[in-house]
Structure formats: C-alpha cells, structure tokens
Amino acid sequence: MDNPRGLFDLTDPALMNDRYAYYRRLREKEPIHHSPHGFWTLARYADVDAFLRAPQTSAATPQDPLFVALRGGRDAPAMRSMQRWMVVKDGAEHRRLRRLVARALTPNAVERLRPEIHRIVSGLIDDMGEGEIDLIGGLATPLPIAVVCGLLGIPVEDAQRCLEWTNAIANIVDPLITPQMRIAMNRAEPQFSAYVREQMELRRSHPGDDVLSLLMRKDADGDGLSDEDVIAQVLLLFNAGHETTVNVIGNALHALLTHPDQLRILREHPELIEPAFEELARFNATVQIIARQLSGDLVLDGTVIPAGSSVLGITGSAHRDPATFEDPDRLDVRRTGVRSLAFGSGPHACIAAMLGKAEVSIALTELLRRYETIEFATDDLQWHTRFSFVLGLRSLPLRVTYRR
Ligand code: HEM
Image (cartoon, rainbow, N blue to C red):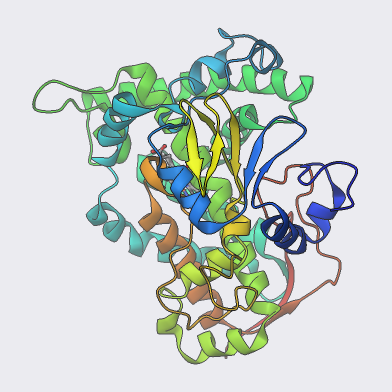
C-alpha cells in the first residue's frame, strides 16, 4: 500500500473516510500485519475469532508507566475502578466476577424488562413527535441509560448525572487521552461511587429484585462481590451498555435508510426485525476493533505473534470478509446463519447480548410501526471521528411523519 503511515494507522483519514476499502486492502495485502507502531492487526474473520477465543489472549490493560501516568497513576480513582472491571480480568478471576454478575442478567430478567423497554421507547417517540427529529439525542441516547437505571433499580431522574459521570470515567480506555479527560474522570469516579454507595445502603435495609440488590447478594457458599467490586461492575454495566446500544440503533437505521429495498422488507415483515439484528450489527459494527495483549505466543495461519504483543482484532473488517460472508458488502436483512462478532467472541463476549438485542429490536420495531415515513433531514451526517475503535453517529437528523 502506498501509505507512508504504514499499512494500518488509527489516525489515517482514509480509515475514517472509507474504512471498508481500507480494510479490504488490509485483508488482501497483509491480513496478519505487524505495524511499524509495534502492534499487530488481524483483518480476517477466522483470525479475529480464533484470537478472541485463544487462552493466551489477555484482556488485562497495558501496565506500561506511560499508560498509567496519563490516567493519573495507579492509585487515581478511575484507575482503581478500572482495575476491578471484569472486562480487564483473565482466567479464574474473570470467570468468578462474570458468574456473580451473570446471576442477575438471566434470560428471564431480560424477558421481564421487555414491556418496560416498550414503554420507554413509546414515550420517547411521543416526545420526539413529528417533523424534524434527532434519533440519537431523542431516542438512541436516553433509551439505554433508562434501561440500565431500570435494571439496577436506580431512579430514572438520576439517569442524566449517572450518564455524565460514567461517560467521563469511560474515557479511561481512550488511547488518545487528554489532560482534561484525566481530570474529569478522576473527579467523576468518587462522585459516582458515593452515589452507588447510597443506593446500596437503601438496599441493605430493603433488598429488592433489581440487579443492584442481586449483585450485593452472597451465594449459598458465602461467595459474593465486595462493595468496591459491586460499584466497579455497576459502572461497567453503565458504560458497556450505553454507547454500544446508542450506536447500534443509529447505525442500523442509517443502514436501512441507505438501503430502501431492505427497509421496505422490514416494514412489510416486522417479524423479521429481531432475526435481522445480526445482519444489521454485522453490516456496520459499533465496536470496530477489540484490543488485547498476548500472554503467550499465538500462531495464526502459520504466523507466530510473540508473547507480549499488543493485537487489534478488527471486527469491522472480519464482518466484511468474503471467506465468511457471501457478498459481504451487501446488506441483506433476510440473510440467515449470520454469526457476527458484534458482541465479541470468547470469554468476554457480551454478558448482556440478549438485552442489547431486545432494546435495538424494540426500538426499530416501534419506529417503523409509529412512523409512516422516515427520511434523512440532512446529507451532511456527522460521524464520531476522534476514536476509530467505535463507529457511530453524533446525531441522526430525520424527517418523520406518524402513521395515521
Ligand atoms: C447492542 C448493544 C451491545 C453491543 C453491540 C455490545 C458489545 C459488546 C462487545 C463487543 C463486548 C466484548 C468486549 C471485549 O471483548 O473486550 C461486550 C462485553 C460486555 N458487555 Fe456488551 N454490548 C451491548 C450491550 C450491552 C448491555 C446492554 C450491557 C449491560 C447492561 C452490556 C454489558 C457488557 C459487559 C459487562 C461486557 C463485559 C463482559 C466480560 O468482560 O466478560 N453490553 N459487549
């Protein structure tokens, strides 16, 4: 590739401007690529999937002094919280945390939430009304935060400040961190912790059947989460459950509006919306890249990636791999047997995939049921540009009319 920045550069404007052409070149020229910047990239589905499942793939965050210093040091509040998140744990420690949280996120719990999700979506569509609306600000953003609050039994009036605190803390994983972000995250974490502690105190005297009460419960054998671990996993649920869902809703509707034949199929057959989730999530994945470190050598297709390497699994490219998906650049809501990597793969695959899927499917179903016409209100859409691990729209201005 005639690119002075090397075959893969996160800051290359070509990656933002035409990411799928960029990924295609990578898959064709060097699907397992060692970047001059030191890290490795994987562009094919089979390699990304095998890498995410491999036992020597470690989710632990880099412990190099620069990473830690840029975030305020190992004892800074946001760093102390992050070190407890299940998403950065390996092996037995990860399995224990995941099991204790999964007790609360059962298929039954998701089924019980469905009517509440319907109610929230309907209310948001009422509030957006007709004419010009912004789908991201009016529905995609408030929906998941209200759902996580409902899940945890936290008053919805507190959703906005929880969102502000958790967004500030979530910046800790941003590779392009600024001093302002460092200050904001370390200010937000103690405030968020104090708030969750208050909520926990309320439940000690009056435990409920909400997820926060369940996270605080000990197992029959006495095993359970410490208060600090509960607070850190609650923060993770807010973070992991929010931006992902916002962007899946925005990206799915964008894909449908740019493929009117596919939109028509879903309008005529709303029962296909839920099964089409995997295809919509494949087509424009929210999480485009999953980063890991290797604790041992990993051999992929004859290439040895040495222990200690940083590896980026480009799920966005894996989703367009013709070796796995026939005619991968075509959106086909009737496509069957799609196994996307939208929820990841291996031990850290999304713990709440059923919930995410329910939120997105209910939102799309209600939008198509309530609005007879939906069209772009601008031809100048603004995508997030600073951070290319995630693909999503800043806003999605639409012109809509209700069905009469
Ligand atoms: C459609 C929406 C969603 C998408 C696309 C999504 C995507 C993902 C992905 C790709 C991962 C794997 C990350 C990795 O391997 O590093 C993940 C993990 C996770 N997700 Fe989701 N997610 C969604 C919704 C949710 C929701 C609603 C929640 C909670 C309320 C949630 C909680 C989590 C947690 C806690 C993990 C970490 C699991 C672990 O480390 O074992 N996600 N998600």
